[in-house]
Image (cartoon, rainbow, N blue to C red; front, side, top):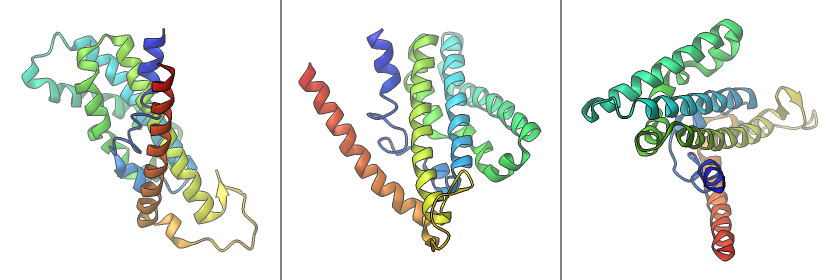
Length: 205
């Protein structure tokens, strides 16, 4: 049981896709100006990476290694297409807000990396936990960035006014450049947190 927990939790802090591995930063810069779009992108990636890991793990012994990457991409594209069709049907405004970055989930480095590094070498359940952990880490990162950017740039969270009416929102928070600067600071803070957690775990051992 502890082994399963270790597989899941590593993607949240110690190997966070955005703040530690610095993978798939495009959506963190482009669609994190609000909490809603950040949440939607985070949940989408979490779902896609978890399901794709299971699919890759199930077919890993059936696929010729020479064509494994195209097979991974076809699997990811199929799952992303289902998500996109559901969003178009039930939340067209959110689908429009996410724009081109939703189809681009197909080539997100973190999804391909976990398929190649982990799912292709482990059983479906372990692969699912790895995908779920990495997806949760991505979701946490997107929400953190989205909350700070929406609160700082508009004074709201999920459209609800939080800051006083007189609050003069700095334009930098809603610009991609502001997201880039913010992510830099968050990477530094997250690495300090990861270092402290690793130190605590070594002391326990």
